[in-house]
Amino acid sequence: MLKTGIIAVDSYAPERVVTNDDLSQVVDTNDEWIYSRTGIKTRHLSEGENTSQLCIEVAKRLLKKTGTSPEEIGLIIVGTITPDYATPSTACLVQGAIGAVNAFAFDISAACSGFVYSMSIADKFIKNGTCKKAMVIGAETLSKIVDWEDRSTCVLFGDGAGGALLAPCEEGGILAEDLHAKGEDGLKLTGSSRQVNNMLCKAEENDNKYLAMDGRAIFNFSNKVVPASIKNILENAGLSADDIKYVIPHQANSRIIDVVAKKLGMPIEKFYLNLSEYGNTSAGSIPIALAEMDKEGLIEKGDKIIITGFGGGLTWGSILIEW
Ligand code: 4VN
Image (cartoon, rainbow, N blue to C red; front, top):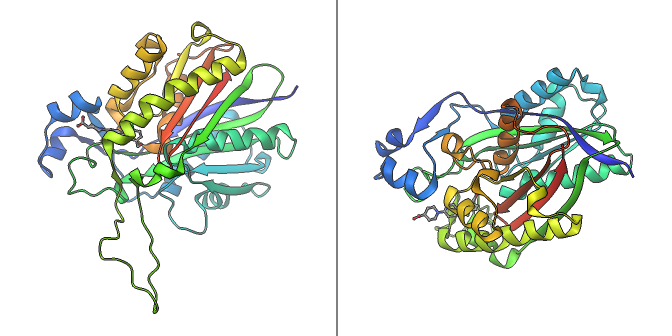
């Protein structure tokens, strides 16, 4: 059966890097506190580039490195919770900017699972023959919805984008997936609230437009669902943890990844982490990590990897890919 393969991955983050020491000038925090509890040392922050601009750079890099012309792209999906506009979608802005005149395009709102959800959707359109080439991008400018006076959240998040170019393949590719949501706990992680506010009804004063989360609840949720999802996907594919070269988790917090690795009995070295440089970039984190691994030559043809996203929604999910 025809499968969906990854032809190329790439990423782009704003150039400006903000250190923990820089943050300690703005809020009451320090490098020791942030690093020991999260594994984060720096994050890239936008000096004005919006989410679509990060995506357009990723898209151009993907076209260039694969020698693909924009007309060949049949689908563009952007996973993001920080789009430039409610409409047009970020994906349409990308489509227009790169001249992908034959593509249909839309955004997916699944927060930290945005890239995993978007990959799953693109996989179906490739497999059913709707398109031959699809671009899937995960991207955020979380800095525009972070409360820069809240020291418990502003230290965690960063801006950045990554993406993959997908096409049908004969061997390898996407082998299995496991997707979930738990909307009943969704309000434990919220951002960009938009209450009704019109001549008939006034929005509440406390309408919170910023990113807000019950850290403990999200931490406990992640520790539970991520190991279960990875177990599920291995079982579905008839594989064991030993068959997996790398797990690329959503880069939320290095302490969560420690717990996940322990629960699965997998060596922590199999979990790729780059959140020390980027912080948590929500939908951007997995494709940025994939692009860095690719650049470092860590993944070779035939390697089996698992990408796993978890967070806002609440949503979570994993995809098993043979490179
Ligand atoms: C998944 C997770 C997180 C997350 C949750 C809690 C947390 C990140 C709370 C305790 C605090 C250090 C930071 Cl698990 C966020 C998302 C959203 O992408 C998804 N950090 N922390 C402490 O005091 O140790």
